[in-house]
Image (cartoon, rainbow, N blue to C red):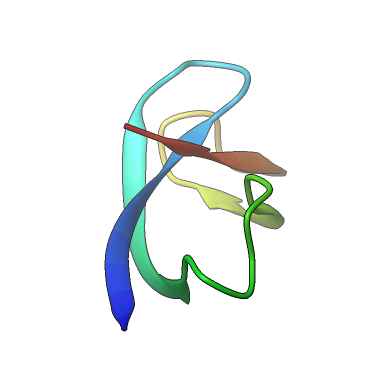
Amino acid sequence: MREIIILACQKCKRKNYTSRKNKKTTTEKIELKKYCKFCKAHTIHKEAK
């Protein structure tokens, strides 16, 4: 079953995006490079709880 996860910016620590992942097949935390409107730059966003 796919669950909703929150992606947080690694620079400013704000929670900007939500995504879905299958926790049975993907056990490690997701890291994506996305645009942060607060930093005004593309930064790494990591899965947060």
